[in-house]
Image (cartoon, rainbow, N blue to C red; front, side):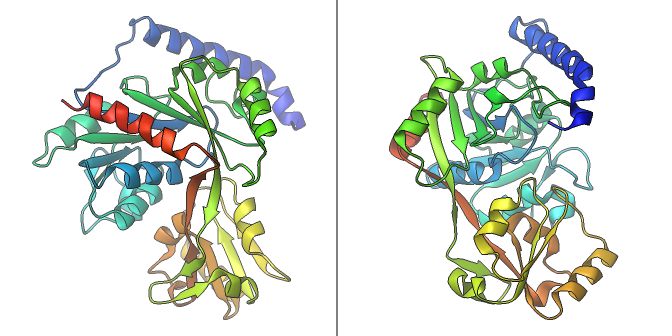
Amino acid sequence: MNLLRKILFPFAVLYGFITSIRNFLFDKGLLKSYSFDLPIIAVGNLSVGGTGKTPQIEGLIRLLSNEFRVATLSRGYKRQSEGFVLANSTSDALQLGDEPFQFYQKFKNIQVAVDANRKNGIEQLLSGSVKPEIILLDDAFQHRKVKAGFYIMLTSYGDLYCDDFMLPTGNLRESRSGAQRANIIIVTKCPPNLSSEAQNTIKNQLNLSPTQSLFFTFIEYDEVVYSNEKTIKVDAVKSMEKLLLAGIAKPESFFTHLKQGNDECLTFTDHHHFSESELQEIKKKANGKIIVTTEKDYVRLKGSILSEQLYYLPIKSSFLSGSENFEKIILNYVTKSIV
């Protein structure tokens, strides 16, 4: 913890007090939460960014969308539109935000919507001509005005919420007690070889209630990088001279997976919108070499002056064990909740 964060400790205590009062008022019904007559699954976290919500949402889409009409609803962070927007063939990352646009690009059999007001977003989706049977709420763990039927909370391996503190001293958006609202807690970004003993140690640290289920996942990288027209195997990419580019919350594992030799790594803030001057500078640094970026960055960068040399590496969230049990829990909730 750096010195500034220590100095800001009194503000963290105040922030924790305010969020605790807010949660208390929702828990007691003094602030109203709205429920809906269809299964709603909220995916989120207690901390700020970088826990792997996007691959987790995508995993749920793969699980559910072949059998049910699925819609995703996100805030659309840093988008340049306002209010409710339902993705269509004219949509782009500026209108939707990068993560929702990524969902729309990858999954053609779902609806993708954005609205900072999740209640209004759900109402708009349900008033449409094609009503979803399931809604996945992206990054909505603290959005208490909507009461989801099922909550999945993510926490990163090596940065567990039980070891963290409130903003601005730590990275928590609310008290650690907020984890009690989760039906499932997933420890994400684990080492693929994390032992059963280490998993049990973490389980004891988290001290879950008997009604909560715990799972462990790791980031699985694709074996190929993709451009608009070409693909290259990752093994070949690793031996090539390249520039690595990331504008995500925690890019270290992405860089570690691909970097070799003198490869240059460029880091930008999460959801960064690249200016023309930045694009020119990136192109200059690449000096004719290929540029490999994350899938989330790619949806913002494709169509830019980098397109001809730009590739992206997809990822997905995979379970160390228990994937069948996870799927069973989700499908049991969904099938019992569909009216």
